[in-house]
Every structure is written in C-alpha cells, then in structure tokens.
Amino acid sequence: MAETLNLDKPRSSRRPAARRSNFELYSWLFMRMSGLLLIVLVLGHLFIMNILDGGVHRINFAFVAGRWSSPFWQFWDLAMLWLAMIHGGNGLRTIIDDYARRDATRFWLKMVLYLAVVVIVLLGSLVIFTFDPNIPAD
Image: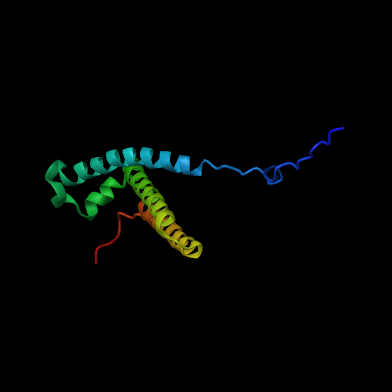
C-alpha cells in the first residue's frame, strides 16, 4: 500500500489579498491632463496680460478690479491657481517618494508639502472671491 504525501497549503493563501490602488495611475493621468490644460491657461494668461493692448504697462489695481468683476476671469484665474498648485504638489510628492530614504522623513516632508498646497490654494481662492475693487485710496 502506497502512502500518500500530504502537503500543507502554501502560506500565501493565508494572507489577505493585497488591495491594489489605482492612485498612481490616476495621479499619472492627472499630471498629463492638468499639464495640457495649464499650457492653455498660462499661455492665454501671458498673452492677455503681456501682449494685448499695451502689455504690462496697463496692469494696475483698476485693471485687476475690472478683470475680476467678471466670473469668467475669476474662474480662469482660480482654475490656473488650483491646477498649478495640485500639479506642482503632485510632482513634488513623487520626488519626495523617490529621494527621501527614511519613512519618517518622507512622511514629514509630505505633510509640509500638503499643508503648503492647502494654505496657498485656500488663501488664493479667498483673494479671488473676496477681492474688493472699491478700496478707498489713502
């Protein structure tokens, strides 16, 4: 009578299945799409501000007040701010992941980065939406 050899199941089946996240894929796609949109927004901004109707010599408080009285230009500048900050923050996050060797260093560098992005986006948005063109001159 031949003896049967019983093998235990491999250890890998006892471990919970690893959950894969598509965050890096979405991050990669965001960088490409936001980069293309930023090219349009920034080149349009530079063309309007620096080339049309006398260039930079016409830019003053009244010009900004007139521009931000339109929701279109508020949205244009807000989109440029948000996309530039999130695009740049995502790029720096990738650099931190690539070059920070210790986990603690990586964690704190990312926390400082995230805080800076949030503060700048919030303050920039606040300025765009609460801009008062009727400030009295002293």
